[in-house]
Image (cartoon, rainbow, N blue to C red; front, side, top):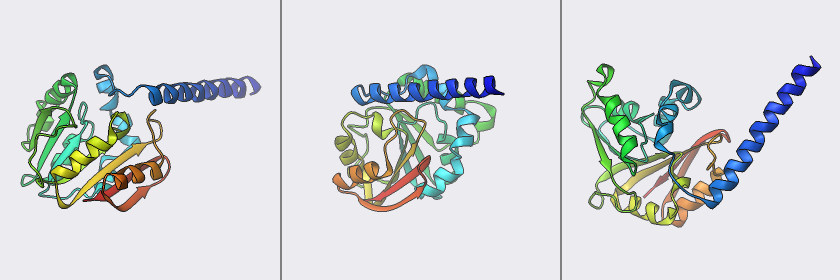
Amino acid sequence: MLILKTLLTIILGFLFLHQVILRILRKAYHFPAPAFIGRVLDSNYRRRLQPPGQIIRRSGIEGGMAVLEVGCGSGAFTTFVARAVGPKGKVYALDIQKEMLEQLAKKLAKPENKDIKNIELIHDSAYELPFTENSLDLVYMITVLQEIPDKKRVLQEIKRVLKPGGILAVTEFFPDPDYPLKSTTIKAGQKAGFVFEEARGGFWNYTVRLRK
């Protein structure tokens, strides 16, 4: 029993040290999640920890909306959002990494996703979104905002493309090495000119909703 407790303490200590080192490195170097971990990010294990339905409800995503996902990656939540907005809605899945979008395209080509016709993949930078002003109902990001070096610039660009009263939903997850406190996310949105509407969830996993 003592050996088991010692081993558990060592493992927990290692995990804690790993997290500390990762967070220190991420403070100094901002870069998107590498494409080779796309399959890990798009896994049922992750979705058990971050249930898609919960994120959709907290974000305010509804049927018929024109929605942009900034930093969609390999599409862990994209198909769920596409089904939530329905055939009258539209999901624009944007990522700066072509390899991530290729993984999402392969996912959409699978038989279980053949019914989804309302997703458009966009390979572009979040600094210059390819949308006209006041054209989108909602923009959401899931563990992405803190990866972006110039957060103010991207938030202002998101604000530009949102319709008056449009929603920006930012979801964060504690195990992510870039995890910010809820207050940090709220302040970033307010500095960019958004109005804080609601924060749902706890320390482990939360969504902040801001309105234009």
